[in-house]
Every structure is written in C-alpha cells, then in structure tokens.
Length: 326
Image (tube, rainbow, N blue to C red; front, side, top):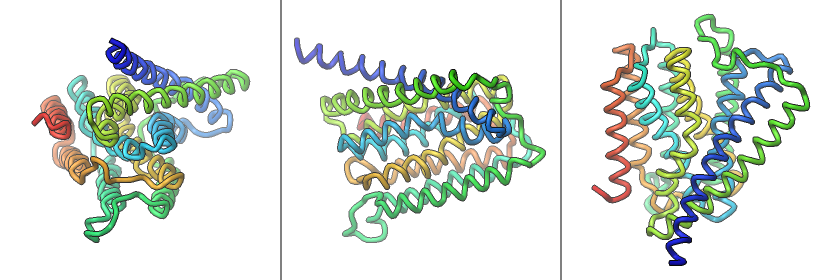
C-alpha cells in the first residue's frame, strides 16, 4: 500500500512540476520581454531572442538539475527528445489544427540549420562512430564548441533582423510593465522554473527506476514532452493568429537553442554521458523530420493536415519502439 501511494505521489509531483514550469515560463516571458522593450530592442529581436530563449528555459533548468543529481543521461535525452518532439509533434499538431502555408523559401535555411545541428550532435555524442573504443560523452570541449556556434547563430539573427520580408513578431503587442512589476515577474519565473524543474527531475527519475527504464529514455519521452509544452502552445497560437512562418520559426529556433545553448551549457558544467540508453536512432529520426520539412517547404510550399498526421504517426511509432512496445 505504501509503495502504491509512493508511486501515485511521484506522478502527482511530475504533473505539478510541469504546471509550475509552464506557468513560470509565462511570467519569465512577460518580465523579460518588458525589460527588453525598455532597453529599446525591436519586437522582432525580442521575439527571436527573449521569447525563443524563454521557451527553451524548461529544458535548461531540467538539464542542469539532472546533471547535478547525477542523471546526465536524462539531460541528453531531454535535448534530443525535445528536438524530435518539436519537429514531429509540434509541427504535426499545428498542421493538423491549422495547415501551414509557407510562401517562398525563407524558412529553408533555418530548416537546413536544424538538420546540420542533428548531424553535429551525432558527432559529439556518438564518439564510437570514429573509434570503437571511445566512450560516448559530450565533453566540456564539445560544450565550448556548441556555445561558440550559438554565438555565431546570434550574429546571424541580428544580421537578419533588417530583412524586409520577415513576419511581425508574436510579441509585437508587448506592453512595457513597470520596473518593479518586471522584476517581480522575473523573480517568480526563475523561482518557478527551478522548483518545477527539480520536481520533474526527482519524480521522473523515481518513475524511470520503478519501471526499469533508463534516465535517457525517460528524458526522451516524458520529460521531453513536458518541457516542450510551451513550444506546442506557442506554435498553435502563432499559426492560427499570426502566420505559419512564425509557428515554424518558433520550432526551429527552439531546436537550435536546445542543441547549441542548452546542451552546450550543460556539458560545460559537467560532461554529459551518452552511454546509458542513448542511440543514434534518436538523432536519425530528428534528421528524417528535418528533411521532410525541407521537402515540404521547397517543393510543396505548405504543411497540410495529411503531412501533419504522418509526422504524428512517425513519432508514435518511434516512442513505442524506444519503449520496447514494438
């Protein structure tokens, strides 16, 4: 009876952790965006930097707490799982609800970046590809390289901000909050993120252990889904109210933040093991999704309901496979 109650409590804490994480992200976006507006940044730059970073903060907090707790496999699984989920589930759900019509080839470059990012992550995480005796680990040197590439990406963003064809940012209606209110929002957001992240890491680790699952697998599935909820909500709203380019841009930007900044910071803090339960297949699935997106953008110009349903089906089969159901 005690074991049953313990198990139920872990699930409750996991759900509470996700709720805190999502609500804290809202506070952080509002507070940070207001501060950025007060600093004179344009709506476009705020959207590509502050908002994109805020939607990736759940992954960052969960990763750092996972490394501190000694469950680094969850950290790598969270990043790769979130990126796979963004490509297949976020785009899939968004397309099923509101088909995404993308004019021209303006998103092709960013999609290609996400494809190259997956190839890069394959190289830094799967060292045994180059040497059979090598230990699979994302080292501190790898983390420094990822962070350096993230700086290059930021330069690309700020250079691109003057392009006339860019859509308006989803934060164009941001209101400048008072300095005190902005500070309070920031404090609540940071505190909520860390508390929610700790609840998620602790409870997810217990659940994984009770089912005999590795930290990497739980990171690829449950934790990745929870930390990607902000991207799901943002993309659906952006696609229905603003533009498909905005929704797709949110997904691509989040993946780049996750792969370069989040994993980079995590591995610099402590080398991240890629041994326990991690497989190159996880990155191959993300690559497949990126290629499919690239084909849709370049040759079809839209992501319809049928393609969205196919993306969701691929993700379902992928999850069932890594859980050894099929």
